[in-house]
Length: 295
Length: 295
Image (tube, rainbow over all chains, first blue to last red; front, side, top):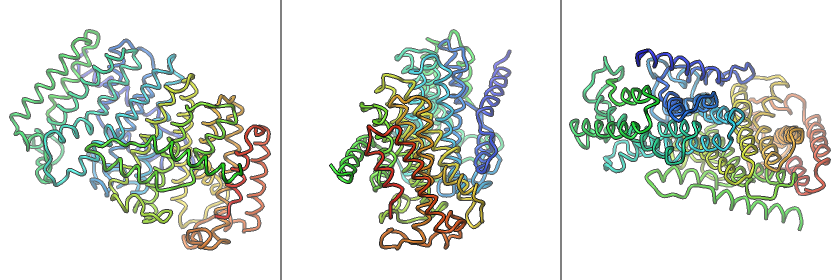
């Protein structure tokens, strides 16, 4: 099977898995069930659960104990998008060509839907305790999820990002923001996958470093596409960073140096992965795809 | 020591414990650390950690493994207040005489502070894995926290409550909302305390029923105080339910029947607790105080 066919099959399986974990219950609070389903099923490439599953397999994991954690990380990611789109944040009415959650359900319900997704993520994640023969592993994975999504990870990155709007920031702060805002949940995906797959401590740390490089390369590639791509290919407005007076890797270092940095980071991530990757060629290709993407 | 002295001592200890778990780290994202500290330390009676700790002791728990979970439930509770106060929700500028989080830090930071508190709650809660000799117990406690705070608990109750504004709702829906919105986190407190203390399944369920009755009685007492108390005693506006066209137990059944219901629920809760409470008279008194409060 080609990489594209494998990717398509695996994504379909992940979509089915996530859907299976979403609340279906009818009840007085059905609006929130609808808002959660709407936002999670609005699309997305499911990169985080994919990375988690493939890293789990890389370390020999074979069971279904990883699935609640895969659903959980996608719910956490979706929660951040729902809150990001709110009028008091980015004020976006559309995402991926669809109305955002607040535009459909109202600001109050979208605020609660984001909260509900975070809480439900941990409710679902805690099913890993019953499914795994090693509750310590599940405990560690839950800690990783909370830590990398929170103030020392994704949310921390969003905070610095918001405060940096309309100001010029230095390179160290920019890279810190990128590693947190984009990198942290990718780190969580690979670390939790490795943990559940039975990886040793130094192997979990190696996955963290690889994912951190992938996140940074991914974000710098985003900056490059913003000035080199077109709205037709990208599916969203270009030159948005300039319009928003945002400091990016490209505004600080230029397109050429940015491109070189993406290549260097990718090479390092793939070299580090190569030590582990005999058994998972798909993961290697997935990471290559993420970094060299054109949209 | 009198009950009041014990309560004051225990609350002081809980405040110290919670403070110890709040993030202190300086860094690029220090605004979010400040917003989290501000909102958690703005006050509150710490009822949930108190109930958790005392139920833990009721079942023979003696260690510190309960403390991260006590801090976690207070963070979850605070998160709900921070988001509740937002302009797109209740639009409150003051709570307990202090500026609300969004009024001090802005709507975007308050949205992120609520998210951060939820995520940090689970980061802190997962420390119970390292501290407890039984990771299954910690896993169960985390599941209880997420379940009772989420769509089948507190958030679910908020959703029904918001949708019921300006509409007349039936008694079954009203009681459902009360049990979720107010009761669920009290249930989580007593259930998690019992779980960590080593209670058996039927004992955990008994705590759930007791806490559910307490929550309902507490909420109906709130409705009564809204029409019988004064702003001087209550510290907040009276007749707010009438002004907001809210269905309450009092608008449905009248003050007298509401008073009788509070008494009946309290009697049932305390009778059910009495089977367990030889070893924890303080818990018995705490529950009596919660229900018969005048403000």
